[in-house]
Image (cartoon, rainbow, N blue to C red; front, side):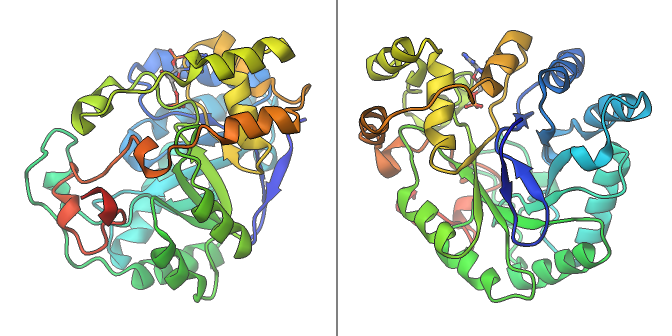
Length: 322
Ligand code: A2P
């Protein structure tokens, strides 16, 4: 069985989940979901802006109807879109997600990004367009999320891409965030932020845990070369020692830090491989070698400043990157 991480606002989150960002082909996603459920995944990560909730709902409802899985065994995360960053929008956006996913509740509802942009400006391509929505008020949005939590439509609440200051503000609310989802991998280990979260009972989920090797557009936008974490000699050497793959070593390194991982793959054999990481342990020397690969902020791949002019938003979280 896949170990779980307890969430302060309720529920237990399997430490490995299937990431579904950037699976562009519908049939490919359905096949991937079937393969994942078959392989024992019970945790699926999606978001309004991935535009795939209806496909996930289709596959999950088939598994539920056939009695192959129970709703309470599943852990579904979705996210409030960056163009829905107003308190009054929260109930509608969550309801639309629930309808598409064909469920009565999600296990975790996250604010996807701390910035707000206008609907028309939400397009990864429009780098220079200024569509920032300056009305963004995290506390007001959070109170609307708390109402959804109270009504049972969101079992747990959290945030994504927030910085320490932004998380701190929400820690003072009635239901503190129980999860933070951020970019986290070998070159960007997020040590200070993870320590901060641990201190405050906030679990951490790593997105791009393999360094997003398929995201060539990311390197085009950032001007940085995509790192080949899977091909690093130190990773390959540790993988050979344990008779595992590089991907399994990278995921295990993060999981052994107590961090949840949501690797994305649309290939059934890789999906299987990515959850098959509980029959070996990285020893102290493996961990030390991998820890030493951290490049801090220089290792960061994803930035949001190209979304609707988000870099100019007062809640843009990573001023050091501007
Ligand atoms: P594919 O979907 O073709 O398998 P991340 O989750 O860090 O964003 O990484 C996702 C990328 O890593 C995708 O391009 C995916 O490709 C690839 N990937 C996922 N699992 C593995 C694996 N076990 N070995 C090699 N590449 C993988």
